[in-house]
Image (tube, rainbow, N blue to C red; front, side):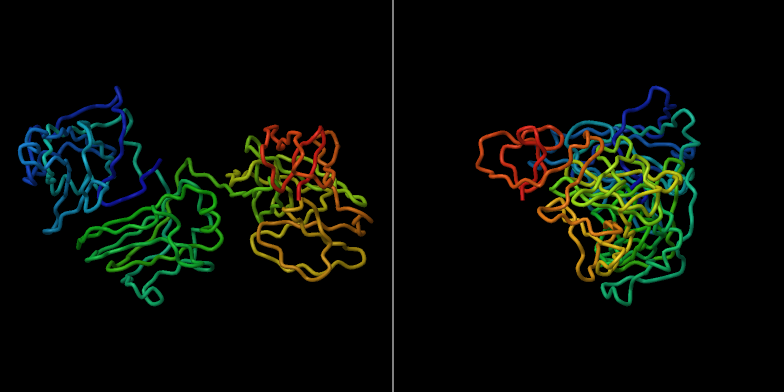
Length: 459
């Protein structure tokens, strides 16, 4: 996991490696009592190297806190530049609670190493004891830094943000999204800012509605005058899809933004989010990406044959770009990796909608169009113009395959060609029902089930 927050330093919990080179840079102890700090000069950190980590050995001053009748324990570490203290621990105002006696490990970026070597740091807290600070370099650690990534500038300039978002935002959406169109999971969006004032805020959000993507894409930095950065790692395929297609919008308050960058790392990868609803089945399509369902936990199908009252669905692992499919599995959202191009299917009656919703016309002679109804798990003939949601698919056949009675059945080839029979079920029967994964369902609702050895649909 790469860094998510960047004030000055990042806090992570880790086990100290036996292969790490340890160096003591400061020795205490220093008891803070009720917020009585100690300054450590920059000379103590002259041996810091790029890729180093600092380990703070801290324990609670239980006796002192008990005597003062103030039995809570907090820790704060600052680097002071031009009279402004920059917190290095990821807590409100840089303060973290100490619940047990343990080490705190902080990862340093190259910029952070330079800043500490120039300015030193200050330790403070509420009834904690700083015993020592050690620096460690993992074996080969100097080569493992955030600089391993390849940074692309998305925007630069000088923009002051305020609560009037309409006039105080940076719009990097659609035609202005630049390198964000090629973002990947594991990439980091980094915002460089200055002049953080009171009630400062920075938000990386969805251009459609301007809401933050999640709690990690918004921060309220401490007041400062120097240059700092805020970073957001893309960790979910659903968020990645929005950023690739729509870009981002940056809003906030009481800060000046000077640069926005996207950094890609060797282990970053592309993926799409596929969502299946409570019925356990859905259609899907993606405009420009070939995707691999191998070991995904769900199965993809294309429509290999059609006849009156029946659609034959054949399993497929590698789905070419702009290909309509049906996906089946437990309800949920799945991350499906993007792979290199695959050969297009020779026969597939499912048509892709792609990344933007589309209007399809009414069925006509030579082209019968059908919309998939997830609730009824069947296709219905389109009698009038219909809007199909983005990333869905519809069925197109040369002739009308609507049966005289009942509805169109789905036949899954990986299940022996038994088909799904449209049988209306009396849900008061005592016989057991099972989902398509073989698990018994005590109170079946609408969907596909196994009952008395047959596939049935409960409406």
